[in-house]
Image (cartoon, rainbow, N blue to C red; front, side, top):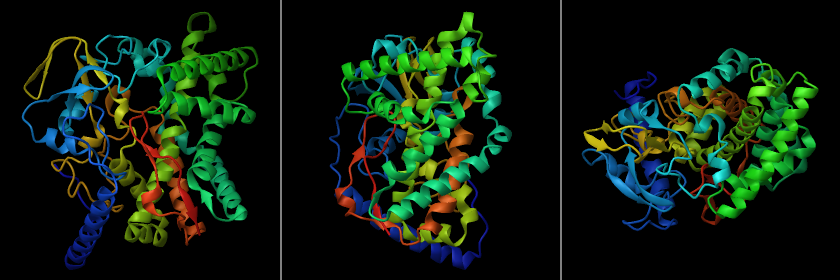
Length: 431
């Protein structure tokens, strides 16, 4: 069933709907004109025709009976799942595994062997995944994350103040989004502030779509060395940070290496995608000024805006690869053991069977039915922390800088496509 809308006066809603639809259609048409359309036979992963539109092939695949099997740039073909209900079910199907070392695992780009062997929770299946997830999950509950709000608000206010004091122009990604998300996750994990640049550069190399396999391998190994030393220090001299707390749940003699990999996973997942959402979400609002005006006029719309932007942008669409652990059937299609399967959350989040007006940005929608954080046993561990950071930023930024706007023509912006996290390379702004 489509998600329900907030009640409005019917006549006013009809007029507003027509205005929004006309303006959004104009934006999408304009932006598609300035992005190269991908050839029909392009290899998976497919490119987005613009920052606010999923690949054209998503809609084509949703319209097909069963599942299509498509050629992949990093190896053999993969099945793609694109309809909301089937994506949701596939993400929590224990017959579809996350073992990155399996020869059939359909990675979106070549993954160094070092990463396939130490990807922590991301690469685990039950029962091991169930055990390790249980040890960590209690520290990421809604109640625990709410306790972080005052500190997150302090970090956000300080960074916005620094941005305003420095004066325009600025890069909203490098000067605001990344400093906020890195500061939050480093404080949470107890990582020294002096190591910020070292960690961020290597994380971007590991996740980016343009780095070579050798560059990714070197970045993974350097991150492993760093986090091995950090975790060892937490066992020796525990503090009041999250990694120190987790040393009690991960005994050193049994789980030292797993805590190293988990700490790296929490750091990687705790800043890159959220920073991308801050920057790309801001760009989406700037390109849909009627939506930004709504948020400026009512900051309490921030939680609803966060959910809609998560659905609309789906920046982590390429993190959901699976490999069949046994023969199974999805949507009437027979999948063989060892076949690669890609449940595509960006396609599901634009499925008209699940969302009314799926290609329209409407921050009053506020539906949490989207799959931007995945679903089921591999639901993003840090989803509530990401929601908190995004809400605090979107509540404060546009009121603090009411004249915020792009400092360059939209057509000059570049986007990261083909990596694990979609986003803008830089977001030059002024005010």
